[in-house]
Image (cartoon, helix red, strand yellow):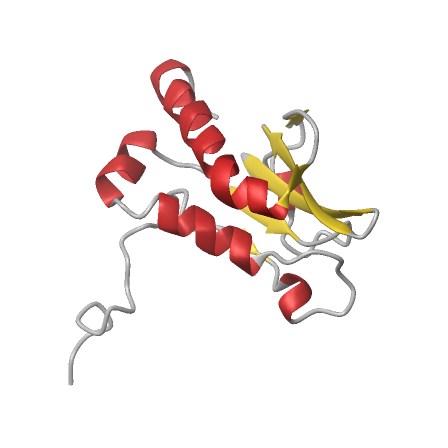
Length: 138
């Protein structure tokens, strides 16, 4: 019998960007207005090289499909909140959350469409994370 790693079911990504928390979103939850799983998958695919992830360091990413906050987007270094805007799936990105009592979040611009966050959001996150890795911890 092989190991989980041999079967492709293990990754050494603890506390790295791809070790994210995401609620099931609209694919499995009737309460939400947006999907979380495609966003999580797109980010994981963009950041699939462990060398680059290790260079970035510890990052806590949380994704919630709606304001119910099952993914605890407000408590991640990076939080992504799904919102419905006139029937369109949109996502709000915040930086600076944590489980600490004195956390301060900063919203990063306007909401982005699902296609935009999957295509461009990961690139924006990469540049912000790269800058943060060379200046100060998130």
